[in-house]
Amino acid sequence: MKYRTWIHATLIVEIAAFGALPLAHGHDMAEHQHTGHAAAPEDHSAHMAQAAANPLPENVSVTLSNQPLNDQDGRSRHLKSELIGDHIAVVTFVYTSCTAVCPVVSGIMADLQKKLGERLDKDVRLVSLSVDPARDTPSRLKSYAAQFDARPGWFWLTGSTANVTEALTGFGAYTANFENHPVIVMIGDGRTGQWSRHYGLSNPDKLLAQVDRYLASRQSASYIKAVGLAKPRDGGG
Image 1: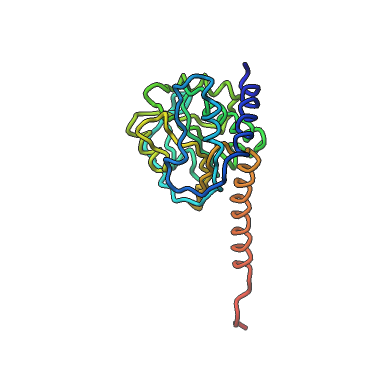
Image 2: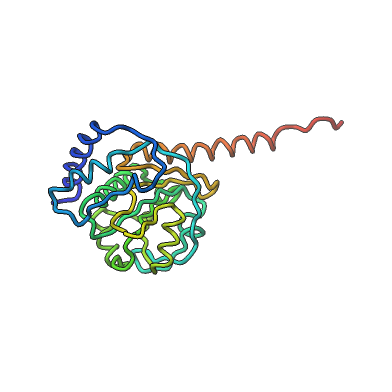
């Protein structure tokens, strides 16, 4: 089954479950983790229902790691200085053997990629960081990324366990058992250091709106700075 057909079917389950769940502001990461990746297919509806209980996004502090990681082409990459750098970044956490939420999260990123158009890689970068670096080799990530038509500007990262753990910890997304990793999307501005955490299976339009807010904030700051520089000084003569 093609991933988009599978995603649409799964999202129907997610939306139906969402209607029966209260919206809550939880700050305990354990409340937002998804479990049961080893469960039988018939248990995925409960898995999706848990992922659907997504509180409103919240502003968070992020410590970006700059330890070397490997992208899907096997190239060594530095997350902080090279990949995110001065870009707006959208970051998700997945692993390729996941059969429940991870394909849906990647499908959402694929839709966001399409909506970004020419801004991808120029202003905005997408990052999918593996939570299972022991098995997710660059070649495995590349094959997985191809299922979602990943274009330049969408980076799939793995690496040594120590370096991946540091990167995950900086995002507040590390768990000792990778199968219990949180269902979150992180969006941030590499220039200002502002980050927001979005829980559950986020709508790509809402993610795009957050990206646009960060870009608009940059433009406003540039305008204010330009006006301030152009403002005539008092006195003189």
